[in-house]
Image (cartoon, rainbow, N blue to C red; front, side):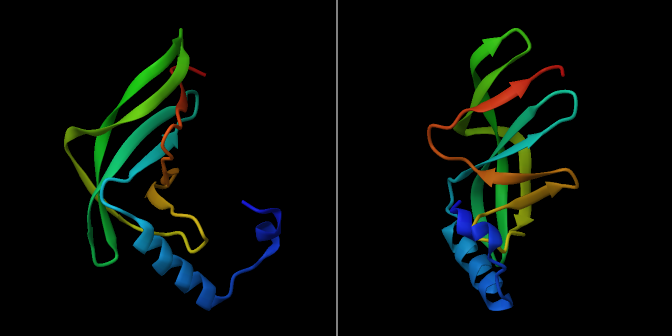
Length: 124
């Protein structure tokens, strides 16, 4: 994010345009990551399976551990490796330039970039 963006307060029109633009950027097959935890860091992965109206439908997908060092490591999402019965829908809440979907009161979904891996820990 450019440094100047930190001080720009978007107008109502900019927020509405950003939200429409962001929704249009969401593609079926995109993967989003949900990082959460207190004494440990958990990673959940979700894949976009449908878009209807202003809602995006996700299904949870499995992840794969790529580095494991005792109680921590890194994992990556496994595209199309769906967890049975895990379909959820969310509305885009971000009115900035970046996509964000709220999962619950303490976490949200951010877009996964190809090649990224995610830190996890099993105990703080």
